[in-house]
Length: 172
Image (cartoon, rainbow, N blue to C red; front, top):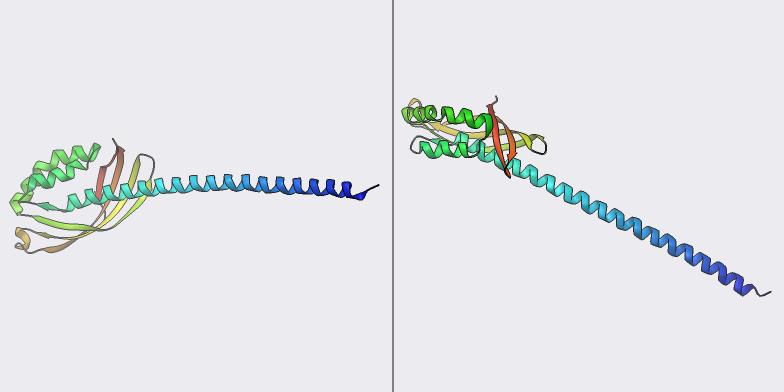
């Protein structure tokens, strides 16, 4: 009996096993690559949502702390543009009073957000804490800017493709 055909058969079986193992590894690797791409895409979408929420909260907070008696309608309209729900109703109701106070006191508030952080984020709701730094000048300060720093908590809702402020509180 010739040993060569038997060793060729073993070699062929061994090569088939190696080919199957390599093919299986390629399939597992491909699945892992797809899963990783999906996770990265999900993470990118989530980071974009965080960025959108922070940008909207920053814009609204800066609208609230940047008021000028020389342009009262512009000042109040900017706040109202980023508001919705309860906050929008409250602001609309009080904006005439805000304008009177601005004019009577010749108030100019100027500031910027120096820090903002998302406290809570869901599909269509978010809570953001904002720290601001700025000044206020009015008749009480004799027109001289005086430092004013505020901490705000903003609740936002996602409406018609935009993040709008539904509630705002001054905190600490």
